[in-house]
Image 1: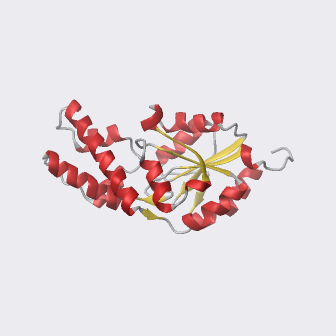
Image 2: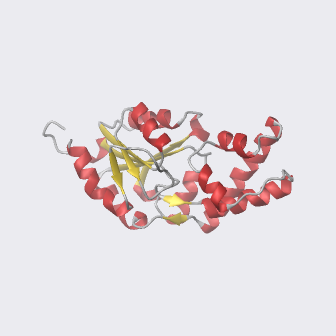
Image 3: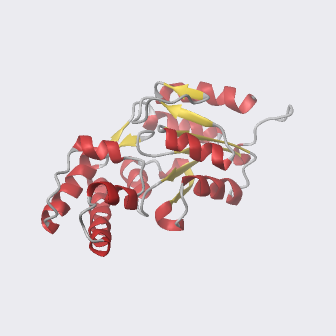
Length: 219
């Protein structure tokens, strides 16, 4: 920082969503299970199976769990699943990690906050709508709106918000690689879904994030 004080509008904390701010796998699993039954695809959807899929793009999930379904039909099924999951999440919400609701307003007083996720449009909004976090979040982006993967959307957030300093907080090794590709430091949410890799920074609880951010932005 060359001795300059942090400027909130130019210092950004960009969050992943699944495994970082919440775990929506229960409600998502219900939505997908209902739609898979309706479309009679012969695949069982469990909370555990959906948890493994969190963080992947919807087309990637489709290739893994519906490889036997013709691509055009698979696309229609996945679109219906995404629409249904947003309906459920707007109605019931997800399981928000400890400290998130309490600390996001506190962080928003110090930094500009953003969300970048590998989801379809409407999914991030369901988190903000149900859990009342919209006032804390300055901007969001996802592959469903831009067609860009996570590194491209992180870059887009940085560029269009004029950020001079930014960090990406996520839970998987893919998140780490995306952050590095976008040229920003990475903080591993070790309480999330990702395991077995070596990030430069790590938190065992969301409550540890405020103090770690002070360190990261001073370096």
